[in-house]
Image (cartoon, rainbow, N blue to C red; front, side, top):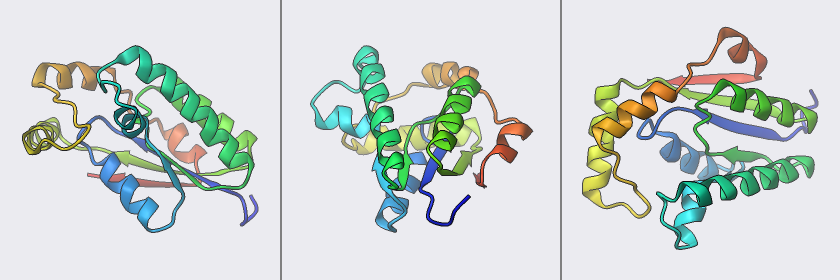
Length: 161
């Protein structure tokens, strides 16, 4: 792949794992344009717990991210990519646009996730959605861990604990 190819930075991890913190840091460091469905939804004044709007907005922002890649712009796509099928589609779409892929995988213990989410809710951070322990457990049951094939399909992987 050419050195001037755009880079798509992706994340895998549940709420509270550190995706947003790292995505913001990467954007500040000049690694690309950060696209966050949660941030856009909050900025538009739509309840971040509205799943229908979230899904529509996420699809539109994803299409925009692909357009940016087509124009050679590095993109930081701040979705959790919990499901294997979602990752396969994203990897395929990025490659079709000549992009390199840097994947950040967050492997954080459930107890630590619960602690972080509790602290975030208590701090009242803008856009922070309270996630009770039962909802976190449900989410963790949905998250499909990366496979070895997925890890070798990208240009760079960074694992965060």
